[in-house]
Length: 121
Image (cartoon, one colour):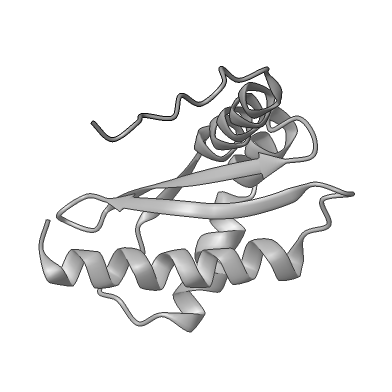
């Protein structure tokens, strides 16, 4: 991926994240923008969203329904030749990470084998 595209993705991530946090009420859910995948021609962008504390289906549906309004707000804040068409996708990596941490904590609670002291010989 080009450095320019990386910069555009990061700029879009920051601005979309600000809009999602400021303009929407999620009622106890933590909604974060994890990543952006913009096409080379900057016509389309996949926005990967994670949701903790509730179902993600309603959040993704609402964001996809309002993608035009979000694009309009982004267009006012970022100067690009064309603002990409946004499509919001669910990213379950945060949920999987929490699951792995919980599993590791459970494993840590299991009885452990006694340590064997090796005698120098």
